[in-house]
Length: 406
Image (cartoon, rainbow, N blue to C red; front, side, top):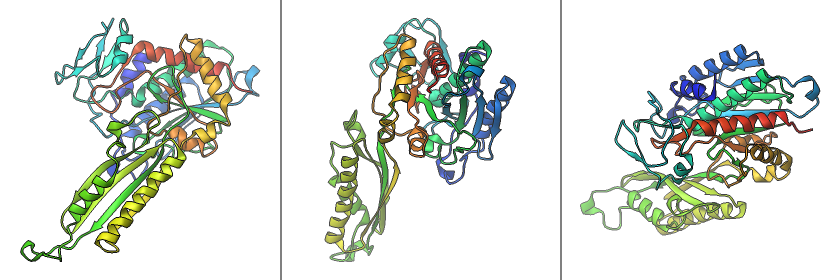
């Protein structure tokens, strides 16, 4: 089965994770549907130690060839779920052979996948482009990664070429931040790993945001507005005041690269109570701490103004920048860069404006940078990928396995 066939098969399986049940793993039982398919395919391939856990993690091993048994083992990781930001059910892919490099109409809605918004489309001219029909996301994040890993391991095994030990792991719930939560190092005792979950097929990323969430809970005092003078404390208005105290130029819409931000993701309230929920992001650890300190100062000022206990702030750290781990494992990065050059691409390492399972795993003793899949426009109806880019990633993964670290 080639990578295109696998990809189209996998995106047909609905696996969207569920934020409302994030306290259980997997958050959605439907994630087992793909996990079972992958388990069965791995068994059919003849892989060793194939396991599907009660939490929908799927593991397998392609043992090293005899001449490479003493080399370090790699694990290739992708996630089963698609993002809950947009529907991942009843995906109807549009396949355009010999794509002309121009704007594409999505037939289900009439929306336009434009070169202006996605300039990489110009470089895809002549390829086989796969888009959505506009009514769902595509699922390339991360079923492209799954298809690429499965195809690479299959072709590697069938070729009989020399390679080191290759572990495989597919995780649930990455899109809601739980993908690495129950990763079992005993079932996957690799020396290092790669998540296959980025965009440009020549990318190897090993720097991500430091991340935290911040929740402001505001207590107001509600009385009849006709008798409110010097009594009423409007929690909703205090929430608006807090929002206006944050720097307007430090939002996702106004930042790029290594620039951090405050992102208001939820705001609700009335006179008696209100809630604001932010996520805080920055690549630089010092600036990240300064952002958290700033929010603490905002809460303090509000309590000074409106009375102690009016505003309660809870800050919860989410994940750290993996660069502090990966700078001690540059041989892993160099291995990926060499594999990328082997297919005629120049490797790119950009700071990830988000997090990956690899960031959490890196801090748990498994150095794990992120590789591109060739897909773009993730988490929405403009998601797209080409068959050729997936084929390129397959070759990159095979090269990594054929040139193990010692």
